[in-house]
Length: 78
Image (cartoon, rainbow, N blue to C red; front, side, top):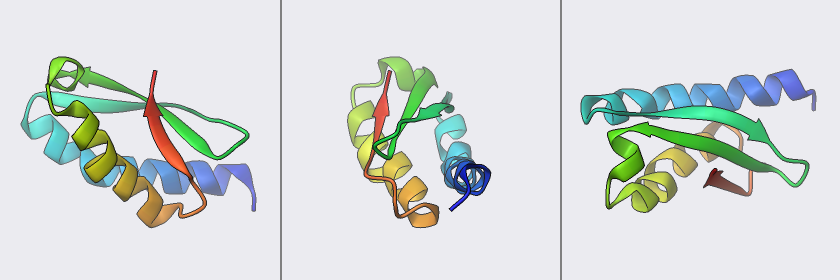
């Protein structure tokens, strides 16, 4: 599978969840994909200090990314 296709699918997942994050004053930025199929993101705005950001990461961002890129094992923050 080519890497640009994977990046497109990861970004599609992030774009799908982004409006929900932005509605609460936050956002997510894609940083990189590691060689062991981990996606690294940075939580921004209100998401940085939100006390439920790890739940948002797992139940929202990770689920959305895996929907389009099921080969991704985990989504982590910097």
